[in-house]
Image (tube, rainbow, N blue to C red; front, side, top):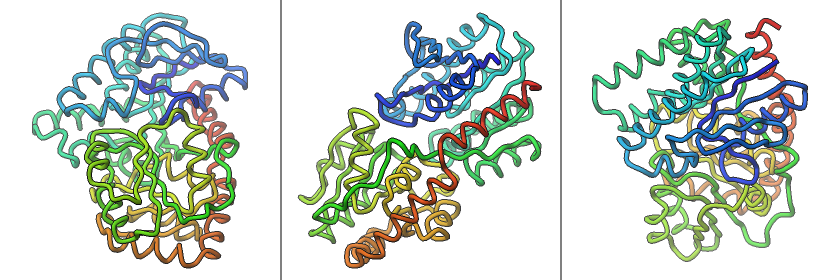
Length: 380
């Protein structure tokens, strides 16, 4: 089967960020399928059997894309959509087209290719767009909001199948017009070979790894650190608010900047006592399926989450971490102090987290489920 895969932010383990498209694509190749990946960049290269085709017009770095102003970001997304549409018109003919968002505009070249090649189109929704930028204030124009919502409805209705990464996203795409029987829930996954438990650190250490942008509640983390002078905080990442965090951080907070590779993130997780998955208190963000949460599970560390809903249920129902109220530094400090003072409970939660990753979020199993969706859409 020939798979035309579109993802603007294609990243391998040598980079930093979500590697889902790389991990899935290389597993598709290992099962005998041909994968052509259209992504932001330049030139062609072979990546473990994946034909990676870079197209100009948009940012290849998600952190950089989210650090610029909202109008410039939307323009960059549109440029990539146009450039990828031209590339998608060139052969060979695919048996199925697989496009992943965000941004929502990634669906446009996929739709163009679907018409050109008369091939089915599978749309993967990692975040609810346009609802996420609307609630975050990135799309204030009412005309553009209506247009974006109309595009969302058009895309999910034209898709042969839709892959949603969380129950909240699944409900969102059904509300936008996707037929429930055509929606498959395939969450983000845990890389069990890369993220592994390590010995606990000598000093209680709390880590965050990921984007430092508008959607992340890191100001509350810094305030919680002021209340816990004997706890070490490590914030690894880059983004729009990194400079402000560095300037405001107390002595027990280290802002390291972006990791050099995914393996560096794995080392930090393994050397932590607990890992944070925190967001701004915006309702749509509770539907997210964040990589950092599943990396935390794989690393066998208690996960601290501040979104009520699916993420809270995952950690509480499986005794794999703690829930704290979004934006509440005192609640966060209190829960971390409890973990610090109850090492046996923290160790138990870490074991449960690793077991959860192995049981429900193994990358091999979820890649096989995604491939089954593509094969079904292609009529195989």
